[in-house]
Image (cartoon, rainbow, N blue to C red):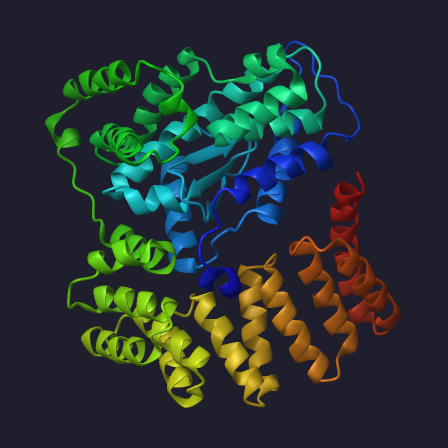
Length: 470
């Protein structure tokens, strides 16, 4: 969580790693035949879950609640407006500069940080996501799989990666694994894209957004690709009739009621999330140009960039100005508190973090920083409940498990410490460490509570180990 949160965005390595993992680790799974009409709902759920493991094991997922809860809220709003589905939709935000969002069978929806950073409004973001949700509800991936006469689950996972992520590596990896014929059958067709446009537009409108959001989002993606060469989704880059598709959407919109066309959207949260992403991960010079205002949010963004530049004295001054400008903003308070914690000003950091938590008790990043601060100032017993709260929100965060494990170890609770070290290694995709820590946890589990907790860990460990061993 916070470790990746403070790092710069990974660039091209992330997608290559994901596809490599899919090719090397998942292809040998036991073969499962899919003949015409043979992709079942169970198959879709299995592929989605394993694809999610791939993503979260090999790509940096942003766990900041300001970002993750916002994206999840948009997904929930869209899903609430669509016909009932046989699975629960789950969202994730990937730290990557491409302008993309994608959804895979089983209801897993992902948004790239680059998409949020470069769009103009929430309705544009919702429009792109609605298009992707339509691919899932219309079973475009599943129906393409049914046309490929025989493939393994692992090959399908790799093909899904090639389809939904797109770009030069995606299609090439899928073709290499499946053969050109099968890969072609698994690509989205022009008809698929047109249907996703039209169905997605229905979802967008039903969710209460202005229909212009989808058109506006597509126009931004097309413009950005022309101006900067930034990777855009396959559904925009591979079909030459994008202009016709936009025109088709606009023609449909003209027939909608004026009250629908004229809907307004509150972009306050969108701007907050965009500010945070630009400050934390954007180009430093471009980010500083965005943060020229004197409001608390702009000052916070500028202070974060200054901290990235290691200009600690100036960052401290600007953070103080941000807090003075927005003393009731939990996000500003949290970011200032986290900065002072890292700077070593424990007293100031604790005051700011506690104030942030008082205003937003669900900010589990602020809770995590406070837990670490209490731990490092000799108050481990006070830190423990905060670690527990964070893990209830982020049960698969490797860094939180590691920090909690060290706290438990210092308190003499070695069985619990090794259990959380095992979780940290599992979710951090560190196979050898996971094996070593799991054995230590098994040897030390003595009480009924420890053995019950170990049984749950063992179930998760065996599931992940099965994938590793394959």
